[in-house]
Length: 301
Image (cartoon, rainbow, N blue to C red):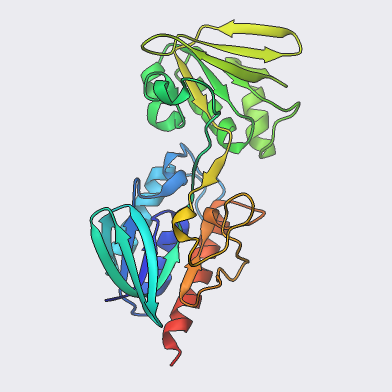
């Protein structure tokens, strides 16, 4: 039996592992998809203390190597449910089997929010993507559409502009939401065209994307693009844990800065919980808070 099982190997989860391991707790880190979470897809991180600039994947890999060197065990498994059988006895069921532990920290982050358009899911991987870092290079020398206007979209715009001939940035609001430095950089990039108060109405094409239909105050227009990148935020995937923790109306864990829940020994951290600020540093702070709370729980008689 492990002392702590941590679900999610993003910044929050790996920071929690770091703190728990430094107090000599045995830790199993479970991840369903990619080590690093959302930050692994960021082309450039410039707001992490002591590091002037670093690629998101490199930052994630450094932290992953650090927790492994301290003794964390790691499995690439998707969690299906968590049950509390007794005080300091949880069973975590995954698609590969079960694991037992004394405390659980969920730091599963959030997944990309889709537009909800017809044929969107059908065309994922055939021109529609939620990760410009992963799939952008496939569209080198092409025109692409980018849907979104916050920090992720701004970063994607800069990345795509370096190898795409033109980036059509579709923003639903009449302003950009994000860091001033990113907004200035995007506005000063000549091959990024920003369409304010514009929505994407349709993904067009047969076997692959060939165009998007957009709509704004000027009417409808068809943009002939082979790639479309959706960056309109994230949504949590917390339904598997409703037996142990309450959710708010938007599906996030209804937990405060102490990362505790209604179930003793069950903690939540990072983007999966209700919070006003979702940044790399706040995810790390959550991980530390959750790990300290879990370790204190394990000390209780």
